[in-house]
Length: 150
Image 1 (cartoon, rainbow, N blue to C red):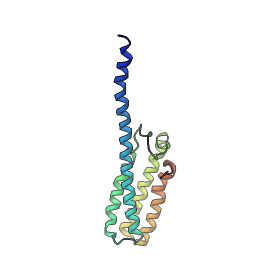
Image 2 (cartoon, rainbow, N blue to C red):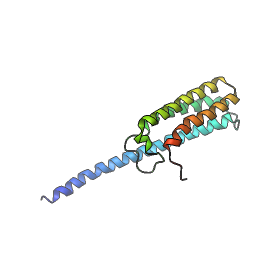
Image 3 (tube, one colour):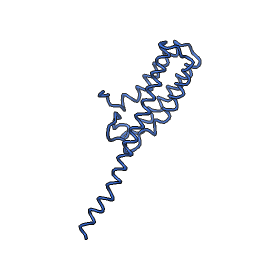
Image 4 (cartoon, rainbow, N blue to C red):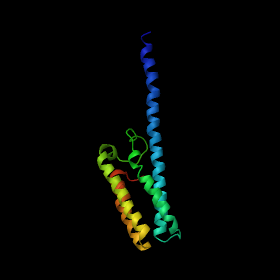
């Protein structure tokens, strides 16, 4: 009868491990979906400010969506989601204060861009967008994202 105890314990623990792994997998899938949305809005903004499409009236909508998504950044990297298929560097979890500071810097850079987009010329908006991309997106991607293998 005592030989059954290890088997019972193993059976009880294995569902917990599986649920934990599914949580990390789901967190990564969600994070990737949000990043795809961020990329989509960024590309739309880029097309507008570079004059590739005549949809300047859509610019505030894309900026607002980007603003909402960037405000989620501190929730996208929960503990335990540093495993599996992710382009995130371990620095996000090892240096969380540094990551949150970079995330806040991106949000601030977006606010500056938003103000210029609302009040400036398309030329000024294009310059502000370039600064936002470098400071905001680049400020997180360079230190916290692995080079994509794709």
